[in-house]
Length: 239
Image 1: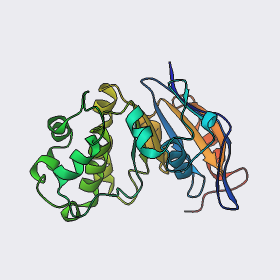
Image 2 (image 1 turned 30 degrees about the vertical axis):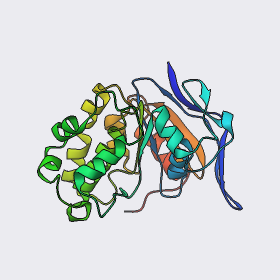
Image 3 (image 1 turned 120 degrees about the vertical axis):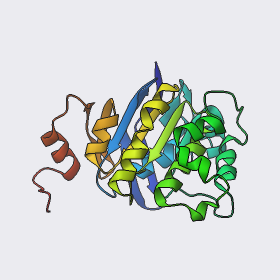
Image 4 (image 1 turned 90 degrees about the horizontal axis):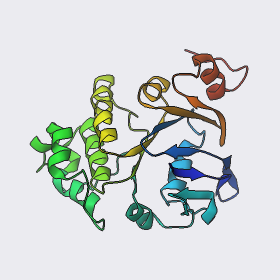
């Protein structure tokens, strides 16, 4: 079943057009990765789906219903939760309070609760009474993921969750994804790192300058095809 889809989705910031007719789909039980360089429009796409940016109603469908014009809280209520870029924890609150906020206003039934989050990320249990600001970047990212899961979403949107983190920490965070998937959540991951994206995703979409330049099953798209879709034809990566 198609859980989430966009139809010719466009987005603007004032005079600047950030998205040009984006069509993506997410099937129930699937993990989809959206990759692309900085400024490709990936975060704008996440902001549109999560209701931070308003769209025309029919440009985004969730479970067959038009949700493009709904505000963020309504989108969360329907079952789409976002792990925002930059983590955005409430600094004055403890780890546990930050997690509990994720369940606020939702029906609260489902696979995820505090105990399950602490099983997923045991370090958070140890640090549960610490303020969000006292945590490392990786631990903050775990809180941000846990907070989104606390709403028991049908769709989890993860925006650049490995940004600025050490490789060993990124490995720990991505190690949680099989369990998140097993809980029944379908996942959209936005990544600059092609390797991480291919490891966890069933399918990938590559974006460049607000357009989809490639889509396919992770097991079937070649690195060369991704490279040209990511950087554009005739552009070579400089090391």
